[in-house]
Length: 230
Image 1 (cartoon, rainbow, N blue to C red):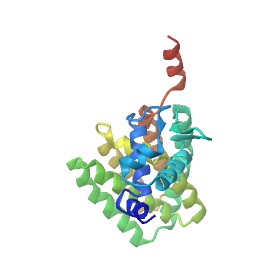
Image 2: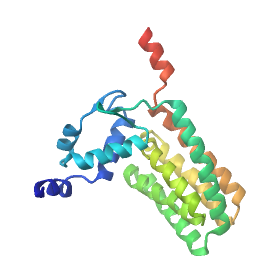
Image 3: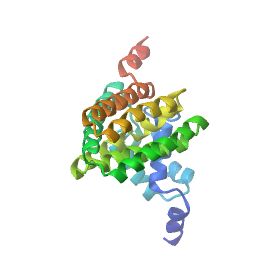
Image 4: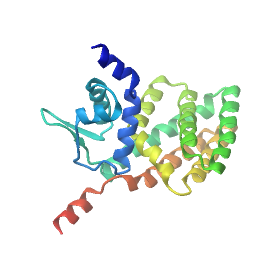
C-alpha cells in the first residue's frame, strides 16, 4: 500500500494524465477505437491504476473516451457535428460572460484584463505557444469571473473543460496565435468601453472561429464510413 501511494505521489497527477491523453487523442496519436489499457497507462505515467481510472472517467465525461462495461475503455469517435454543437453552446455562454463583464467588471479588473492582454502580445511575437495557451486560459477565466454570475460561470467552466483539448490544439495551427490575440483585442476594448453588446458579439465570433479551426481535429463519421466502404 505504501508503494502504491509513492507511485501516485511521484508520478503524474490525474489532471496531467487527462491533459496528456486528451492531447494524444485530439492530435491523432491515439486513434478512434484504440484500446486504452489501464495497466499500460499506469506504467507509462508512473502511477497506480487508481488515478488512471479517474483520468479515464474524466476523459469519458469529455466524450473523448468510451468506457464499456467489463470490456475496458477505447478512444471515442469525436464527430465534427458533436464538436460543433459543443462549441455553439460555448459561444453563447462566452457571449453572456463578455456582456456581463462589460457591465459589471470593476475598474481594477478591467485594468488587469487589459494589462494581461497587452503583455500577451510579446508571447505572440515570440511564438510561445504553451505560454500563450496558459495565458488564454486565464484570459477567459477573467471573463467568467467578471460576469458576477456563479451559475453562468459554473456552466461555462464545465463546457470549457470538455472542449479544452481542442482549444489547446488550435495553437498548433500556423498563424493562430496572432489571430487569437486580435480577436481578444476586440473583446477587451469593448469591455473597457463598457459596451456589452459589442463584447458579446466579439466573444461569440471568437469562439465560433475557434470552432471552425478546431474542426480539423474531429472525425467526419460519414467520410470515414464512405472511405471504409470504398
